[in-house]
Image (cartoon, rainbow, N blue to C red):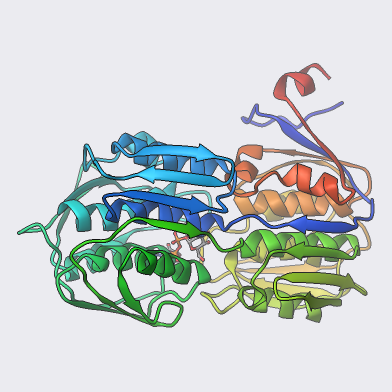
Length: 434
Ligand code: UD1
């Protein structure tokens, strides 16, 4: 067997496409909620129990970041217990923060709890430069003195306690909203964050903080008001279902023209995704309060523009592009959130897709079939798009770069095998010998 030459020597996913899927997929807890909520546990000098935590390398990395600060963590199944009584240092190590951008968000909770924090700039990543200027300006508005030296953000609060303030975000950044909301929970007085991100994970973080005793109103809208409290207490909290994982499995149904059910989900969180699936020829119906059934009828082209919530999520762009490659007619995707989130295009083209990229637009002309090929995942959601394309393609697709997939999908192969997909993970040694 031939394997594509790439710098990545990890395991590969071998997918034999063209098999119909059927059955039910259990959706795990939301990655982006857990990461922010883990950062927020630093606000509370006690035990925090998190349930419905997915099994992901991003979570393991966040565990390592928190452990480097002296936090004691027990991870059993989908339950995390974090003992945040003692924080031994306010300095997060570069080697860990650079591997997981979301770990930068600890700057908000660290500075709120300790009055000081040293967190390395996370740097850019595969999908864009991803600056943290909005986080920094917001912390300054709450009274922190912030300077950047040798790649490390130093935040210090004279007197030790942040002061409530008014923050207007130039862009509704998810991470900046979360960092600043966490910081404001323990500040002296009231903070108002305007043009805040409205993503469900922001609301989940607010609910978690409220369960610890924080006073937060308006999370999930564009204006969040936080009245600071002197301390927060221990909590036992279950994470919401992952809307992006759910959306990915719905696209698996649509691209293979297979009827599937998924759950638990919060259907409202998936509104833009469901609207586009319906436009593209699938019925999606609710079954009970927290389950969805997709009934595909055909695959039709549509247009998508990624936007902050409640707009269409950038984290579903690549998966929908895979679906569009096999949909009748011409589709256009406009990516407005990240400047470099089209790297999956070249890989889909290797499978026979007809896609042209012009600036932030991709024009996708539907083709009758894709053919399996060796492809390289370039980022987390790109890896999901390639798996989806592989499920629908003729013949065998070999996906490399699985460390991206493992960051954000809990047991993807097992879940796909459970609904009839023909795929297996092959260890690096095996495919080198094959
Ligand atoms: C979060 C999600 C990620 C998702 C993204 C957008 C987590 C852990 N990750 O990332 O999966 O794709 O939201 O829905 O929750 N920006 C600035 N300055 C800043 C902060 C952001 O210019 O200080 C820009 C970014 O470069 C990007 C845009 O704002 O172009 C959106 O980024 P943001 O909403 O902050 O995304 P993240 O929180 O990093």
